[in-house]
Image 1 (cartoon, rainbow, N blue to C red):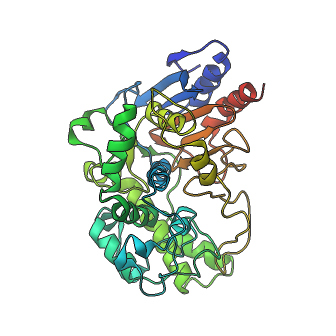
Image 2 (cartoon, rainbow, N blue to C red):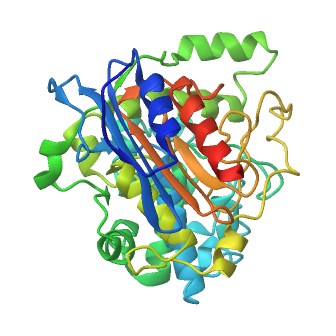
Length: 395
């Protein structure tokens, strides 16, 4: 069995054993941290940083990928609770340059629920992976675009536009960048090792990610969508294919110092499992003297917003386990089970995983440097400890 560092509270030994089994055969490293009612009950790590040839420790940092989206959403909900942001208001109220080219009816809630119609950039915008790191370039491109569908009538995952869209809303609402707001109002009060835009002083702690899963290529995507009968020359399909290819290139770029230093609030927060779990814990209960949002705010944030929607035409078929969105958080589905109904959270590319269950009092962070998860099935490294934790929660 894989050697595991750390500790668990009495009664959580099976979680430790399942974590060890899940990491068996993984060339990389991982951390798992679980809070229950504001206190740590699981704090584990295992494996290696193979790039620097050293152990993956409790203090190792890793890019959190789309787990970042939940941290960004949290900033919006905190501002809404303070009366500085109306989630039902038009985005243009906070970002005047946005409200043109058919975007005057895009609401903040549409961004948070991935239903704004701006899931990615048109290829003509010229936003490649390097340009995703350029805030002003992304902002200007979004201002010039028109939505792919009437906002609120369909949904499709906003791979990385989510971060710029929500970031500009936050800036307009409070005058701070979303990175600064997160640092000042979340990370510092909670003592989190978590940043949107990693300081150079913390670079020595990074375990760069590497991948064991397969990257999409443009040729594969064109062949797949064509084979399914889609018109790959349509605006929607061209944008989707371009966005998926750019996402793959962005994942590679986030393994570099420029990728970690930039602020991409949809994808490149850097942290560890302790930080991710502690952030979620402070959403549901006072943790270390800090409660980030009230029960009422959290309840509103977790109302399903897309269960009644389909993808935009022609992507209207529901297959597999479609993503379920609340306001900035994902809700449980077969692929991302969390602790069942009542949970909220967000996974990240390759296998990062953060969530909480308010009623049961659990908050969980799992971080890894080996991109294994394919997004179509539960990550095999999650399955055992997730099931063990659910058994404990349901007991």
